[in-house]
Every structure is written in structure tokens, then in C-alpha cells.
Length: 273
Image (cartoon, rainbow, N blue to C red; front, side):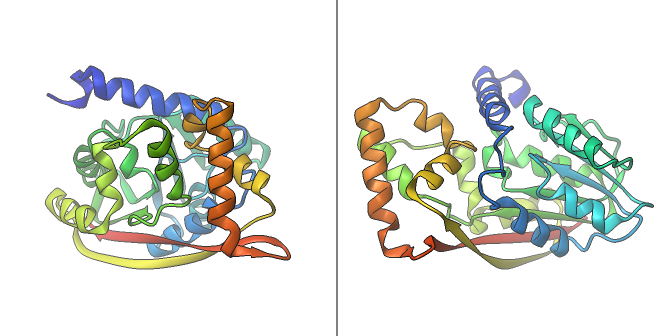
């Protein structure tokens, strides 16, 4: 059964689309978190002038904007995102900048509405572990790439931001096996799956970026600006107080005069068709 015929998978996609649409206005606006990793992803993909780039799960353009700079006026970037709210805001951002060689559409990475061998590069930032069927996504990315084209996928390789929140959630709600796709946040799962999908010359690099939260309230505002909001919206006042206590405990070793300073690691995996 494909995920298109699976009610559970369809419901999972609808939930992801709803949460990211709801957070779209604030996504990557509260904290400059995703953009540095987007620039690193585009650099690893070796996007060049004149290229046609597909950016999957574009969000507010963390990868799409640097891809536009890299392709120049002779290239083109197409962004797709499952969340209509993200598409609406990013389209407005592009229009405000007067961009003419980029387009953003609502689209499903498991069924990309593009011909075979139609793009030079695919960028996919921090999205593969949200998909009900990551193997199908990888197959689709391989299909739309031209021969010799490059895919670049970023994950946290298990070192997710605020991973302590999962412990808080288990403390409140009990153990949770999580989504099966979360395994694709680990390089030892992703790389063999990419090879099975037909990608070759797989290469991985680690990227480290400094992150600074001005206050505990700043971190909470950031959590509410992305997928973590789905958890916080489910907490009552007592549970929210527990989350805030655990947040303070976790961040205390990273306190500085400027707030709380940490370093986030991400893994970028590239492959060729």
C-alpha cells in the first residue's frame, strides 16, 4: 500500500501541513537558525549559475534564497512545501524582492509534480524525517534529477535541537516510539537508503553553527515558531510549568552575559544520480 492509499499516512501529512502552516508567519523569524544551515546545504550541493534547482520543503526559504543567489539570473529555483501557509508567505517574500526566476508551490515530496530528469540539483533541508515514506521521497528525488545531478540532504544525525524536550514529553505523556521516519535522521539509516534509491558518490560533512537564545522566553518563542508548537499547544498550565523548569535546567550550563549560547551540529549528505 502506498502512502497515498494509507489513511494513517495521509493524516500524518495533514498534521505536518497544518502545524507548519500555523507557524509560517514566525518560522525562522524568531531566531536565525535554519538559514545558516541552508547556505551550507546549497554550498555542499555545488549549485552553479544557470542551474535549475528543486528545493523540497522550502519553508521560508532557508535553502531557496541562497540557491537563487547561486543560480544567478540565468537559472531557476522551484520550491515545494506541504504547508500552504509556508507557500503563501514565501511567495510573498519573493514578490517583495522582485524575484522572477523562482516559484513556490504546494507539493508532496512523495509525488513530485515534475518530469523525469528535469532538474540539476535537489536540496532538502531537515525534511526527510517528517515524511511517512522516506524511501519513496528518495526515489522521487532520484527520478527528477538529471544524469550527473546532485542531491543534498541535511539532517541533525540524531543531535536534534532541544532533544531534551522529548524527555519532557515522555515525563508528561509516557514513552512514545515516535514516527518511524525519525530513523532517517541518522546517517547510518539515510546513507544506505540513498544508495538503494540509486544515488552514488555519497559524501557527508558536519556543519556546526552557533546558536544564541537571549532568554528562556526567547527559546520558548522559537519552539512555538516550528513543529515543537504541536507539543506545547497540548500542555496544560502544570505541564507547561514543568517544560519551563526543565528548559531552565538544561540551559543553565550554557548561560552567558548575552543569554544562552550553544553550538548546533548538522549533517549534510550529498549524492549524485
